[in-house]
Image 1 (cartoon, rainbow, N blue to C red):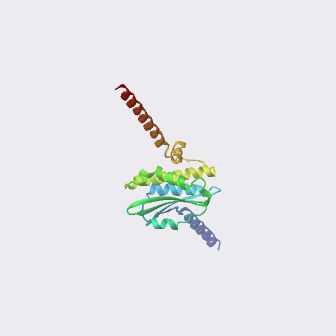
Image 2: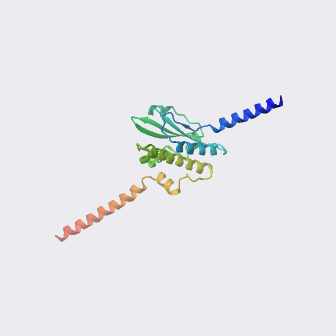
Image 3: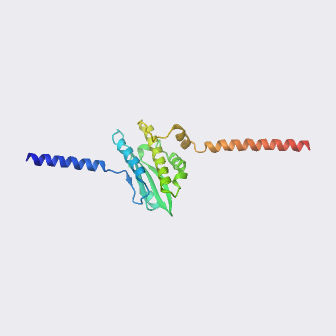
Length: 195
């Protein structure tokens, strides 16, 4: 009797350990994500489950862009969804109620644009590095909101600045071009007066 109880308890512990360790935060029926991306997402989320707020950043691949409208995240979830649309990948960040302040629609759009060149790539490795960049940007903003510690994958302040102000580089170039045009007009007028 004692051996049966010990065996039953050890079996129960094994089952609980297996089910806890196999929880995946990646749903990839389209086969878009590589192992490195899946491991990053699962490891980060497993560490999140030990915190008080228990945020989740999930990856999801969909067959069709129409499926994006049916996704309803829980209040503590952020879902990075990739939908196939005419052989192109449509990436969207869908945010639960608790994280709508740090991850506004505008900021989510800026994050996707920031990683856009990588996300548009036909190469799987480059596309996955873009997905990891989007994931790390979301994770960094979650860490800021929940006052969690940063890790080696967290974005730097410069990278976050580029996400917050994607047009700042264009503004500098616009000012340079405007100064050159003004200088050119002044030169043109001065030559015209001499003749």
